[in-house]
Picture 1 (cartoon, rainbow, N blue to C red):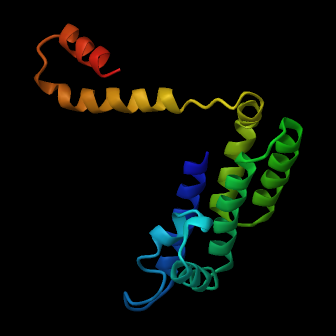
Picture 2: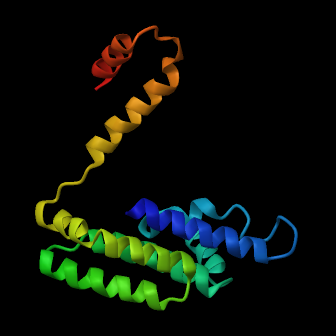
Length: 159
């Protein structure tokens, strides 16, 4: 879900960048890495640059705040508190007026039960996603395999 929040933030950044006319020395250009990093991992110069970027657009500021709020939500200790904070986050995203954040809110609404289960069991599907990614890489490289059995063996070796 944080990946989706990062995609939404990046989409807002691109939209704001397209609205700004000017040369490539504008602060919005080459700003992706600063915006997508965790706030506590930023150096003092990067924090200064971040504050300049967020002053450019209220939509960009809202998208960055949404990403950081979602990160804080994952650190919530109890399931009940997490459910309450998720509902608050969803209503905040819907009220933001930013189309990308509204789309993110509808995704969170669709996956609300699964998100709550993360706080109940502290288990994610990251291992499965990693294995799926390995299989996709093998599939892209598998043009030379003569049989499905060789392809299957390669997957089993990698997993």
